[in-house]
Figure: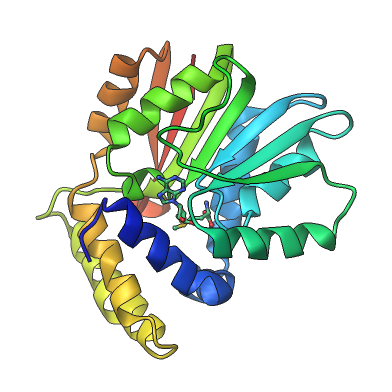
Length: 233
Ligand SMILES: C[S@@+](CC[C@H](N)C(=O)[O-])C[C@H]1O[C@@H](n2cnc3c(N)ncnc32)[C@H](O)[C@@H]1O
């Protein structure tokens, strides 16, 4: 599958939706929950605020944010694929006190009002977009002046570094075989391909500043395996 092809990406995430959460837990030993909590904590969402979770998938971050912005706050989770959103809606039904609207749409063209959000998050989404720079531009457009954003994803490492060797080992020897065991080999082989065209931390900071953000700082997590880009408009 071609990384960045919107129709193929949507089809892929529709196919993995039912097993996505379980695989995520297994492949990260549950650590993705900690990284997502760190993303939310770093951005200091406040009660009463409106936050967007772009490429929300099955809704981990949107639900976490909805807990944080209570009382009076609202969250919208937006994703291109219908199946992950169906899983997210079911999860919310078990916590009906959380205020989340789920919307199917394109993170590059959300159609939402400019400067309407206090904060925006995107986890493991930027790498999947046809144009990551345009994705950062859309996040900037959606934020009110002073608004905060955080982008969590795999970190693109220098190819000859020991950390990159570990990342390749992890993706090829652990991720792909584990996914293959539940019939999703091709879907998870896509991960390494998508990382090859993903900007590294320094390039992400440059793209964000070019998109108009006042500050852009990329932080490495878990010995450089993951990256967290923190932005302020
Ligand atoms: C790897 S999943 C991440 C889901 C969730 N954020 C998480 O961290 O668990 C990537 C998600 O991005 C969505 N996606 C990919 N391209 C998109 C686009 N252009 N607009 C909106 N969602 C998109 C996919 O449908 C998928 O659900």
